[in-house]
Image (cartoon, rainbow, N blue to C red; front, top):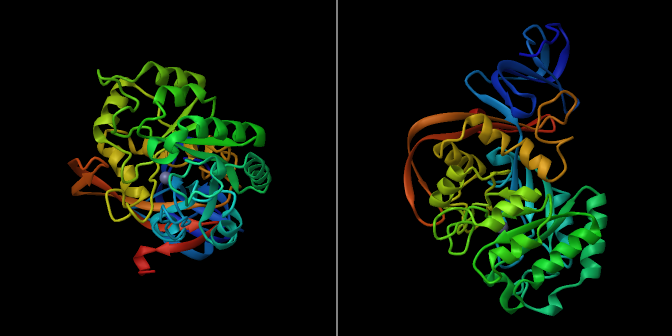
Length: 387
Ligand SMILES: [Zn+2]
C-alpha cells in the first residue's frame, strides 16, 4: 500500500475503505482515495482527514474510470446511438466512451455540438471514412468519400483532443461493391491526418487477409473475436497466419461485442492460442443494450467467466485502451495528479445467464455491479442513494 500523510487535511471528496485496484500502478489494496480540485490527491490512509463529501466504500472495488473503446453515442440513422450519459456512459460506470465512427465529416459538427461538448461522460471519437454514414451501404459509393474533408477534419479535431482517428467497416454489409477500397482510403486518411485507425472486421468481401495485410503498428481491429465465417480462425480453429503477422507488427485487438460480433467459442480458441487482446469494449447501441451486451460491466464479467483475472479485466478496460488511443498519460490510472475518474463497483456472486452474439447461452457465477461513478472528482451516480 502506498504511504500517505494521515493528517487533518481537508479534501473535496474522500472515498474510504475501498479495495483500490489500479493495474497501471500494480496497486491492489484496501485504501482511501483523496480527491481535490477534480484530481487524485493521494491514495493511502486518510483516516484523520476530512472532506466535503465522504463515500464509505467498504466492500466495493475502486478502479480507474472504465473506458469503453467502442460504443455509439450519436444517431446516424442506421446505427442508433445511446445517450452518452446513460447506459453507454457514466450511468454504467464508463467515464470515457469512444464513439466508433457514428459520424462522418458531414455530421461531425452536429455530433460535437450535441454530444461531445455537452455530455458529462468524456466522449472521444473515431471519424467515419464515409462522409455520410447514413447511406447504405456506408462505404458503397465513390461519392461518399472526400479525402480532403476527412483528412482536414480528423487532423483539426485530433489537435483539439476530440478525434482519435478514422473508422472503417471492412465487411460486405458496409463496403458493398467497393471491396477493400474503403479500407485503403481509411488507411491513407489516417496516415495523412496523423491519426489512428480502427477497422471493423466482419463478413467477406473484403477477405480478412487483405484487410490485415494493410494494417500497421497501432491500428486497432475491432470485433476481433466475432463468430462469423472468415474471421481470425482457420478451419482447424487456429489463428490464421496473417493474424499472427499483424499481431507481430503491433496491430491491436479490441472486442467490440455488439449484436453480431462476439462468440464465446472464438474467444476460447483465441485465448487457448495465446492471442493478444488489448481492449474489452461493448459496441453498445440501441440494438444490443437490452441484450446480449447490456453494458461495459456485463461485457467485462464475460471475460471473468472466460477465466481472466479481475486485474486483467480491469487493465483491458482502463490503461490498455488508454494506451491504444495515446491517452495513457491522462486516462486509465488513479495516479496522483490525474483527473479523478473512478468507477466503484462490486463483484456479485450468483447464477447468471450470459449470451454471446451467436445466441450461445452459458451459466456464469459472477457479474459486475456498478455502485458509483466519479467523473472529474464529482460523484455523478450513486446507486446507494437511489440517484
Ligand atoms: Zn460499432
